[in-house]
Length: 287
DNA sequence: AACGGAACCTGAAAGC
DNA sequence: TGCTTTCAGGTTCCGT
Image (cartoon, rainbow, N blue to C red; front, side, top):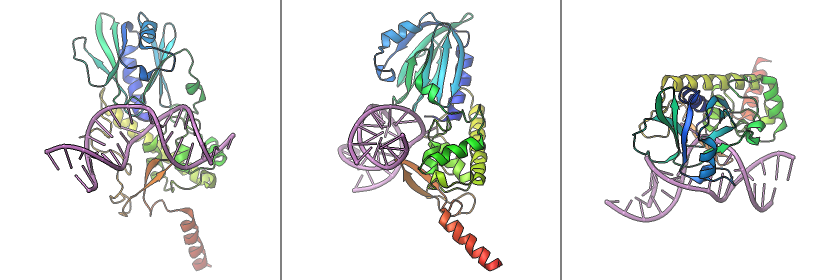
């Protein structure tokens, strides 16, 4: 799914719909969302009668805290939560339905997920949650910690940014956008970045997250994902390989790193050996 | 231990 | 037109 801004959007609306609400009935329509050892009936039984006290987010995980226990929800690639009235027809790909009451209102909160990469885990603790690095939005991004983390890994900086233990919430889109804003080549070994470049990367990350989150907030309760047909692509380089760079007009190119695609501007984000060649040429001329 | 790649799913779009 | 291939914003497992 969705990356940090979209999950934060989901958290906001889930909190509106669920905080203080009582689950009258829970229905789980597909066991593939559940952890090994759980059945739809177990999960439904664990939820019914519970009251939601809090909805939290860390990276791309959501935690719905109940008066007893909690539920962790991950949206995978295509998951979304939405509110529905009691008499609304089933939705395509509806995987979980919570029939709740809040005050005298009765309605439903539904989880929709075509590709089923999402997770729905009733548990008081979740190891994956505990392993997450600092949340890129809530905790802010500490340049020194990011620099140290990047120096420790021998992989491309783009791939490192997807590691949720380094920084929680960055996904394939935000990584590409941030590297473009920072004018850094996605293929640079993460160890090769200078402190100055990591500083630029932090600014790039903050810029793309802020921008995307603002768009998500403005969208209201139903946030269309960019791959849905009819949704305009709000991103600067993501999904725009073959089109001109918005900065310099050079045709943006697509590469594949660890089986994920990356778009880059060959001119604005040149490999470093080209930059040092330029630097040498310049210093020769000036000397 | 750390890394790249495949697998897990479904649907839409592009290619033939 | 219809069949086939490719690709999609994530995570995890498996082999090297």
